[in-house]
Image (cartoon, rainbow, N blue to C red; front, side, top):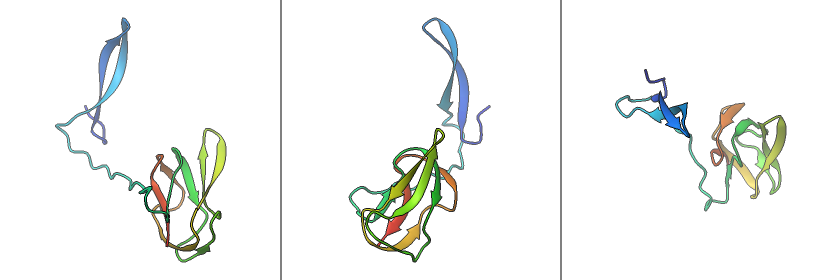
Length: 111
């Protein structure tokens, strides 16, 4: 049976060994909301550098300077700061509190 994401586990032989493989079942509609990706051509958009758990350090309406930390990301027991390259006002938080993200996901918009 497919899971809630529309993925099904099938068994296949790889190098003579039976292995489970996840495949998308196209006959099932999954109610998965795809995260918005940051546009690298827009300087005010701050993206997650890699997959991990992000915690915002700013709120909408906050004034930030170039180089200010706008969020932190945790992955594999390490924490890194995410900074903005543009000064301005935080016009939008694309994440709601502490949340799991993928690399390239939009986190903050500074305008």
